[in-house]
Image (cartoon, rainbow, N blue to C red; front, top):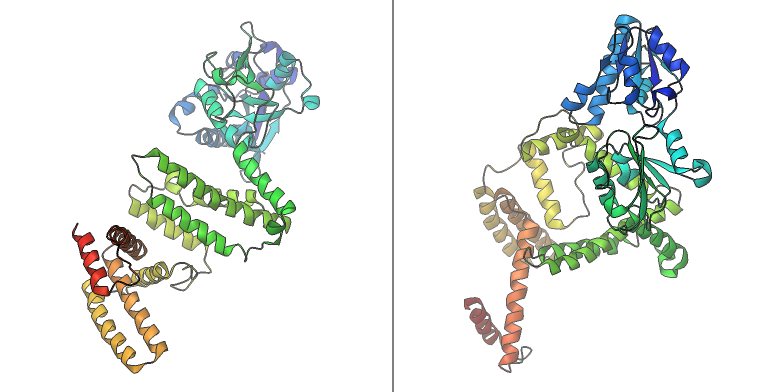
Length: 485
C-alpha cells in the first residue's frame, strides 16, 4: 500500500531531531516539507535529492484550511506515484498539526497508509523555559487562530500556540478586550535557539513587544475574567435562578412563551427608536437585546435540566446551519447579489428538509397575522398563483368591502369576521405587490396615529378641554389642527 511517513523536526534546534526522523529522511528519497521556514528544515533540504516545500501554497491560498487540504491532496498523489513519501513538519506531527490530522482522516478512503513518527514538540521546550509541570499546573493548550472559541470560559493557565504574527496576537487580545491591560503574560520566542527570548510583558502589550513569527507562542498564567466571560456569567446566572428562585423554578417552555413574544416586540420598539446620531439610544437596544438573549438562555437551561439539550447545542446548531447556508462565503459557490444568496438559501433549505413537500410547509402559524398572510401569499406566488400586478388585489379590496357591508347588514357575527379577514388579506396582498411589509406599514401608521393623538391630548389640556366630555366635532377640529400644523 502507498504510504506517507510523517516526521517532526522538533521545536527548532536541529540537535533535538530524533534518530528515527533522521533515518527516515535519509532512507526516503521523495520528500516534502510543510515549510522551509524552520531551523531544522535544512536537514531535509540538504539530503540527497532535496525536498519540495509548500511555502508557495501559503502565499496563494485564502485560508489555512485550503493550504492543508492542498497539502493532503499533493501527498496522497505523490504516494500513489512513488509508493512511499516523506512529509516533514515543524515540531511534533500530532501537536497542533492540522495537515497531519487531515492525512490521518483521509487515509482509509484514499487507500494510503499514514505512518506518524514521534518527535519532540515545542511544548517540551516551553515547559522547560517556563519551569512548570503542565499537568500539575493544569495548562490548557489553545490554537491562537481559534482563541475566542477554544478559550471561552477559561481563566488560565493557557499556552497559546500558532501566534506566528503580531496580528494573531492582536486578535487574541481583542477576544478578551475587557481583560485589564496590566495582566501579566509571557512571550516565548525562538526557544532553544541562540536568539531565544522569554519576554514578560502585559496583556495590553502582547502585540507590540516583539516581532512574532512561526516560532512564537504566548503563555497566560491567569486571566482576571474568563474569555467571553459575560456570556459565561449569564449562563451561570440562568442556572442559579432556575435552582434557587421559586418563580424561575415553576416556569416551563409553555409558560415562557408570552414573555418571549413580549421581549421580541420590545426589541422592535428599541430598534425603531434607534437614532444613528444619538449613541444614547443604544442603551435601550442593549437592554432589550439582553432581555431577549436571556429568554434563549432560560429555555436552554430548562432543557439542560431535563437532559435534552444545552445552550452549547443551540449555539453549535445555528453556527453550523449558517455556515452550510453561506457556501458563497465558506465554500466555492458564487453569489454576487442578494437575490442569488436568497435563491441559494432556499435551495439549501429544501435539501436540508426533504420532508417539506407541500407549498406551505415551513410557514410559521403562530407569528403575527399580517406576517402569516404575507408568507402564505409569497409561497403561493412562487408556484404561479398570484396577480400579475397590484391592480388585481386593489380591485379585490373593493369587492371585499362590498361583501363586508353585506355581511354587516345580515347581522351574522361570524360572516362579518370572515369578510373582514378577507378584506385584510387583500390589503396585505397589495402591500406585497408594492414590495412593502404590511406589518411595518401598519405599525408606522399606528405610530403616526399615536403621535398625533397625543398632540391632540396636549392641545386639549392646554385649552382646558375635557376630552371625555368634548363631542366628536370638537375633537375632530383639534385633530385637523394638529394634522395641518
